[in-house]
Amino acid sequence: MKELLEFVTSRATSYLKEIQHRRVSPSAEGLRGLDGFSEPLPEHSTPAREVVEILDRLGSPGTMGFAGPRFFGFVMGGALPAALGANWLASAWHQNAGLFISTPVSTVLEEVSLKWLCEALALPRECGVAFVTGATVANFTALAAARRAVLARQGWDVEAQGLFGAPEIQVVVGDEVHPSVIKSLGMLGLGRDRVVRVPVDDQGRMRAARLPRLDHRSIVCIQAGNVNTGSFDPAEAVIGAARDAGAWVHVDGAFGLWAAASPHYRHLAEGFQDADSWATDAHKWLNVPCDSGLAFVRDATQLHGAMSLTAAYLPQGTHREPSQWVPELSRRARGVEIWAALKSLGRAGLADLIERNCRCARRFAAGLSQAGFEILNDVVLNQVLVSFGDAEETRRVIAAVQQDGTCWVGPTVWHGRTAMRISVSSWATTEEDIDKSLAAMIRLARAPLLERHSPGKGDVPAGDSIVER
Ligand SMILES: *Cc1c(COP(=O)(O)O)cnc(C)c1O
Image (cartoon, rainbow, N blue to C red; front, side, top):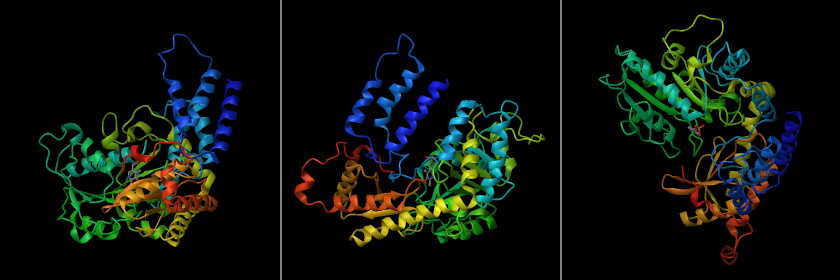
């Protein structure tokens, strides 16, 4: 085992060193190498060292450089050194984090980190917290608690009786709601298409004045951090109206909620702490390894009631039972990496991470704007939308940038306009990385026509296969 793990360490450190300089997306050769995995189920055993060697030789060149400093597609985050180290040790521990009795350390680290998280994100300390796979499942989990609470007010026990014959619930979302919220509503039997959509402004913010009539049967989903613009819904106005009506407010704050951890950006998340539930990711802005998301519910009994395996009562023991707060029973000890990330960063380090990323986003916007390209959003956080002309030209530049490999960005459509979306969310990104990436983008955008039609130095199919989302 010792020899094997030392071998893994040496391969992983080589990988992480290389990824600083390697092209961000895999080369055509790297992709072809993945064919090497296709073989019939092996008849005989292979030594562990050889298995890892094959994995590195065939697999590493086929990776996307999320771990490097110049991946700006989607909102991804990297993995902080302490979080990666904790992830390795936790894998060696091989804990199943479902039950306190079987894994005290995972439970205790969840208990400690959930307190830290509530503090860092300015959420109520009495929240029930679920450690789940990502913001999609966090949205699902929190909305299950919302569904329970809203129906209980009408004398209906949804966990026992299901939705057959249940009183109606009105679900309200902004027109720029993230698709994962819609999917969650579908999974919860509340219907993907049964939602009331509220119009939004040019930054994707819900227009509070256009809210429908709300009452105690309503669930309103708002957003802290639009995935395109980074904008925040007007929390105070929406939550104020919902409060008066007795409605439940849920916040999708997959990355934006982390603004609350920075003194400089805290004002953006102002008011969101008055909601009833929140979903966020740890694998995005906290920079822990995938997969890691968090659901918070102010009334802990509603989360517990929706997720507990058996009778819906709060246990009286001194420790929480991890599986009573999440959809899963058996699962990985996600609290270990979250604890490690927060311990290594501290309050100041976390604020610095957020602020550095936002500074880099502004640097991108300023550089592209100075070069004559149009920034489509108000760069309030870590997201930048840029147009290089018409849709075709913008798509050409995105494909050229992906092919060039200096950095990686994807396309999106913002209010009818095709745009390059830049998200800065990795601890590893420096201003030097921004300048390098800017230089590549500007060079490729200005490339003379002749050069455009000759084969690029990259060799990867352009981003056609990347689904816009
Ligand atoms: C990324 C994201 C999600 C989905 O999160 P996953 O971790 O991919 O499940 C939901 N909402 C917003 C605003 C996001 O940015």
